Image (cartoon, rainbow, N blue to C red; front, top):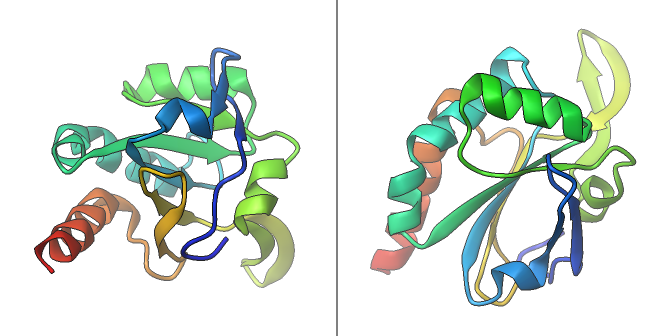
Amino acid sequence: MNIGDKLPEILGKDQDGNEIRTADYAGRKFILYAYPKDNTSGCTAEACSLRDHREQLRSLGYDIIGVSKDSEASHKKFIEKQELNFPLIADTDTTLLQQLGAWGEKNMYGKKTMGTLRTTYLIDENGRVADIFTPKQIKTKEHAQQIIDRVSKEQQQ
């Protein structure tokens, strides 16, 4: 996905098995963040950063949706354990991650492997990508503040 691209209509199923569609967010902006795995240190830090700043992000007009390859059951446990206040899409077959361009080759401890590339997409009211945070730009513990800073700067222009 690139800036200006439209998201697919069906995003996937959340932790409760409910289908999430782009149309559900028509007229609203949202953050769609792709992360590698529930209950790992970096992914937990990123999710908790977004959880802790949710109200500030909402005041800027953004809802939050996470997506990873984990199952609905894994997401449900992750949400309960970390008290997350937003849905997580279970993309077990990586369809959405691939469409987003957030699935690809990674280097894990010197070994090349396929996996989720930590990427965040800011989606506009029309379901189009307005901005992207690439894997090298994301600081997991500070990610919500990174989004707030970028959005605030763009809104001032």
